[in-house]
Length: 319
Image (cartoon, rainbow, N blue to C red; front, side, top):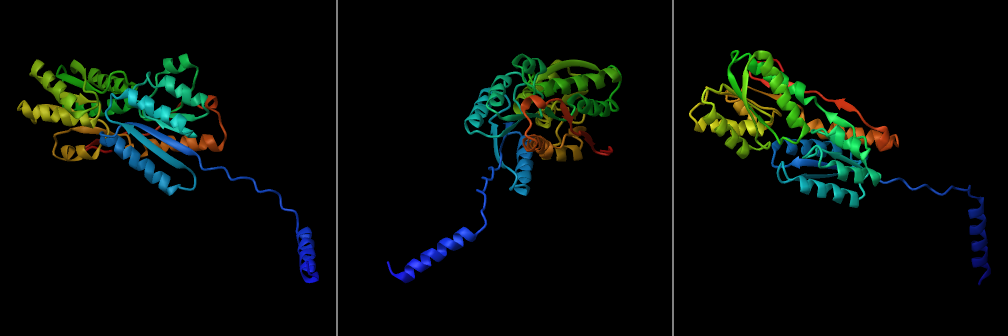
């Protein structure tokens, strides 16, 4: 080794020793992965929900990553359970879920919580008894469905008379939000003195609701109104009314304020609906889990209800 090279090596060593000690850099934690598991993406309401969530994630790309999934139809509970299981395997940090069934999803959500995943419930409230049985607490972020349905029912009540027969087409009967909307409609009809002659499930979907509405109209020729638990079912009811030659003779209300219902509100085929701000439903849940993750909260520290707004939408009515 030449003396010149030896001198360079000594100088380099001296320079390194002269530099201030720098502590090892701590690893920056990866962005949390948030899973959004919805019901049927064939329902415009949940597509709107997903689009709202994706827009929120895009605007907050540095804060979290989003995995969004849905099922093929409103009653495909087994597929939704499998989606949650996949999210557990994927090791997401948080799960925001609109459960297809208020009870059936609780056991797999217990698995998610046991795996250290923060779980927040939106849209359809999980059954309190089922949660208690599994010993878990899951916060619900969403509107008061009974209150929202009553507002719609009260508006309808202004257009009918005491004693008028009406029918209720509800969503999947095992879901909490379907039950609550039916109760809200019944509250309004009871207050108005209307007679609820039938309550049947339209499964949240157009075709089943069309079949149910046709049967109601046939069994009750003098029926004055159909109160539908969502707008998809209202669309099915409108088709049944048209087929029965009763357009303009039977009033229809819905719930959700999806885009497809707006022309029907404008021309009077639908009297009213409720806007529960679908594009923000998942966002409210995502904000809740991000806050919990930032504060390093455990699932047991979460719970209760965070109520979001719901408003009447009707032609000529103040919304």
